[in-house]
Image (cartoon, rainbow, N blue to C red; front, side):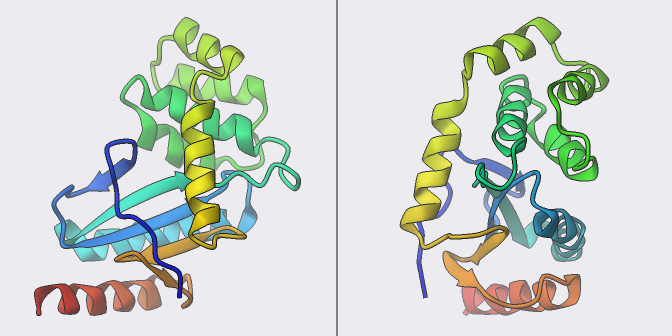
Length: 177
């Protein structure tokens, strides 16, 4: 089983930053499997409440998904304006529309500074962060998406909300012991 480093200052964290359990996803915004896992992850997080923090790390499979890297850059550009999770959710909810015009539309819908957003995409301002995420995934044995880790250990179970919640509850029990 592969182990990875728990969240650091470069990571995006959803939920209680001091939660006893951490769920990390390496994902690709254009990956259909990630798209199907997204609502299950949100459901499991809702069920677990403040006992779980969720970290998303980019793992764009650019050879298979031509918009994946650009979508990751859009999420980071939104994150630079404090709206990472809003853009993250929009990208997964609109996987069939990840072209540049679509991304600009999402940024406008979120009320982002359009000039700054477009400049960030044009200059690849956040590419280094995405590359660091990708490389950390490679070092941790990630070779596809979505890849999930619970408490630093790779989760190989089902991506349905019940199974994922059960695995998170089990990790919570171990953390409390």
